[in-house]
Image 1 (cartoon, rainbow, N blue to C red):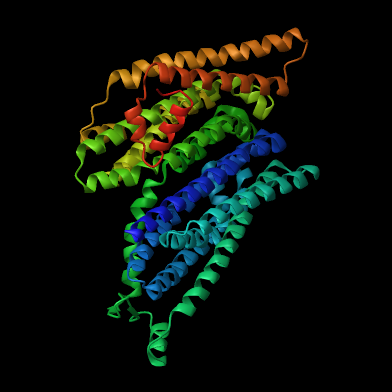
Image 2: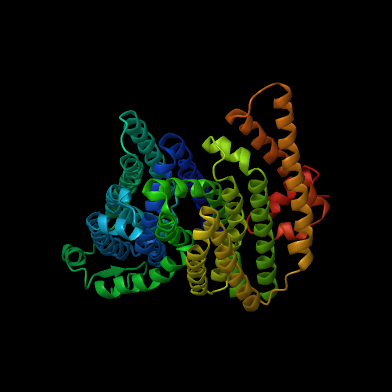
Length: 566
């Protein structure tokens, strides 16, 4: 019993550390785009946002599923204390993923001019070459993270994530300052900014190698061979290595090829399911600049417009990052309910998750939409692309639902369908870009993004409703949220108007500091009204709040103490 409690406690502690580190590292990584645009300008911002989705997609395809697969196999071997087999797994997979990284890096570096021609913009070639260096470090770093996660040790992953992002942003800003002071061209400045990804990957890998060396030293001390001959056989002959479990029974290992095949078969579906945002962004990379250029604005003009188009993305990514982190809470709870054949609990968890993420996404979308102008000035110094940002805002609601519904489907055992639905959304995004961008420019691309995310989310939710037997109430999903959102939007606009009026009376000109006050006033007022109306409309009841995995009971007690719940 004590062992079970200890394991559960360790898992919760590890999940908390990893979630906190993920939120912090993603926050650093997302917000770094703001100084990039401020210091480099919209051309540099456009080149960066053209190349980075390509890098993200290749990295995701190459490695996204392998850390999870490694953690699974390592955790299984931990049951029998099979340390030697774990070391064989990491050794074989490291050779495989390291070689894959080198091949991808060389292909990307040598193929940079060809990729630039596909994008139809020669300015991005040097940036592609610089980012290709990251393939030498990031795959191995991710693999070692998966190894330690399999041991329920989240600290190495957490520290390496924070170090990686911190070094990446620091190197980017230092190179931005240096290159802009030397009046370098936009393509060189963007290439320097992208080199931060390689520097961050190298720093993160060094952290993981430090932890790997400590682990290897500890295991070497624990492994005492039966005799010298047996020890030599275990080390020298990987194909027929013999590991000994707790009871001393010999377990013959499968061949290296079969082991790698098992890992790959497990990892590939996870890779495909992880392509949500990278694939959508890559569609934009290969279509939007080319379509804008076809309109007669030239390479630089296309990059400026593409940079303006991406202004709202960091804020949307913050919302989707939060959705991704919180959706992890529901997966083990759903898996447990499915294992127990508790259909009612499974339905309640799905219904609650959809309602929460729908409301959070809509609240963020409406807030960003009505405050788009002051937020644009606050972050990027001018109002260019404000209407486009208003459209981009609504991707927060639909991408949140798409992500959480995919997590819920995985929790009930449906793994491949979310990837298929994502491909349908990406196809829709491509076709809509071809239709709308020539007519409406970057605003057309934003509208296409909203529709594509809506389609992917709708397909996931429809499958979830059918598979889990859900019944979704119209009042909880549409009527009450509409009342709350009208109140939230009115409060945000009212607070912004009040701040503008005060500054006008004081004779202060509109500018960045005024926009900061307007934005923060609007966000604060909207958030307060949102909480009040959620309570008054009883959108979330106390018994539903208690159902939240891990955090429900504590959150309920806190709200009761604050007299929000009675």
